[in-house]
Length: 529
Image (cartoon, rainbow, N blue to C red; front, side):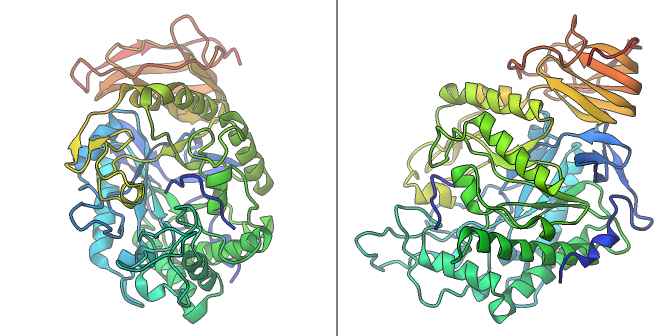
């Protein structure tokens, strides 16, 4: 989860099981969902692709509604219910991925347990997302280690420290703090001796607690080994560096990632391999850069670097890095591993009108780097630890679906956030995506092209190198599909695609009935890229 200005003090042998293709006879393609296709994802030459050879841009939302948060205010719910309506509303914004926050504490509530009921809830969410043409990333979420690291009621903190709150992540039985204080410095949840100590015991595998999470990963991967609509696994959200210096901390994190990936590959035997998303420590979310795990620790062919990019939002210093510099730093780090870049979290949480230009700049950078990310977050309740710890249980929550607190009454989606988030983009572009901007895109390859356009007005994009172009109205916008056979482009009327400035688009709302379609004819000619 997001950080608000924090300052923080066996190997991959199973990689040979994963080549980015189906390991055995499991289906590589999910059924068509509302006309969108969801083939198994893979990595090709450092780019996120599907097994049909298309570049895939995963753009969507974090969903925390299955997370297992501590209840810091007994009168307020920690999460909102999750149902099909959520995924339908996300699809109407053009979303093609959710980063579904899941909790180790719910998966393994007692040592060695594996809660099949919780897995069933995860599976239900995956299936609902799939029905709306949305992939799912299963994110092993944690904040400040776990639910039980909050300061007990009635406890007194030293004068220079603040009370800590319980958050989410590890089960209580896997929480070893050596009696250190749960109070923190400067209201910063990670700046707590108990949190740091709990993480260090995890890295040191005290009492085998890391073994337990690794084994849980193997069991979870086995549950979804035949599901192409599961994009992949985020191995741990914003890990704390523990009690070590930045470079030693990065190394011990890398060793955990090795073990987790190997366990996932073991669990997937007889099925298909999924993406393995790895993050830098929580320091990156606060500062926009950090030491990262040694490159020799990340050798899996389906690894994806997934930092959280909060530049000019909630970084400690919002003057550096800028939004643009934050993308460049992240891309440089991904290049060292020779893996794709995808940002697992980004967002703004204040006045939408004041933030709109920054949100548009962020989407411009997603386009410039031809990548995607997941907005934090879809819904947030009044009892969410972010709200309670911030002392905001009597104020509206700030996000894409704000509510009035403490009542929880929905306030409606701010257009200043919804419009940038719903901007047009190619969900799946055959071959190589060579350029992408607000006025269109261009690529080179052969296959089925799928693109999203928002609003009620038929987009009628100008196409070159695309045959059988079909424009279909769907909830919230338009689905554009066609077939490419070499160089191609798709752009606004009068453009060649992806050659203009990256200005903002408009979300709007669909005014016609979803499901209508028209053939736009065949595009001819070559791309201007």
